[in-house]
Amino acid sequence: MRRIAFIFVSVLIGALLVHTTYEFFTADEGIQYFSCHPGRLFYAIILGVSGCLVPFGISRLPRMLKLVALGGFGTLFIAGLGFYAYLLWFLFNGSAWWAWEAASFVGGVWPTSVIWLEFRKVWRQTRENGQSEH
Figure 1: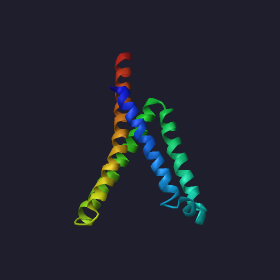
Figure 2: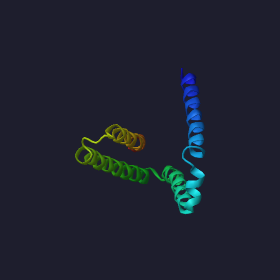
Figure 3: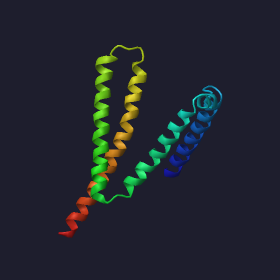
Figure 4: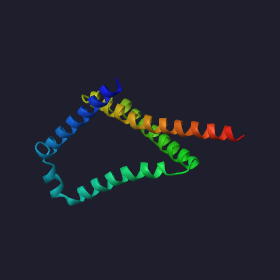
């Protein structure tokens, strides 16, 4: 069963990658978008590199600093989601784009959940190691 799920997810990711590449070059005119304003490409590169380096850096931290970093990021994400929920409810209530707004909110729940699950894993490891030393 795990093998079938892995194959399905791999095919899905591959299909989405092909579709996104096609959209970038044809419908979205991505080359023109970045060639008109080269600074946009710089911002995209900075975002991509920092998106790789931050998790790598957090994974190399000692446990206590990792707990602080993950807890801080998790709290920041939850505060951001709470503020976004407030904006959705009070400012965009009755908007014609409610489905897209709800989908974007749900899309923000995923990274928050991943951060908190990682925090929970490190917290349990720290507690188990701390209890075994006593």
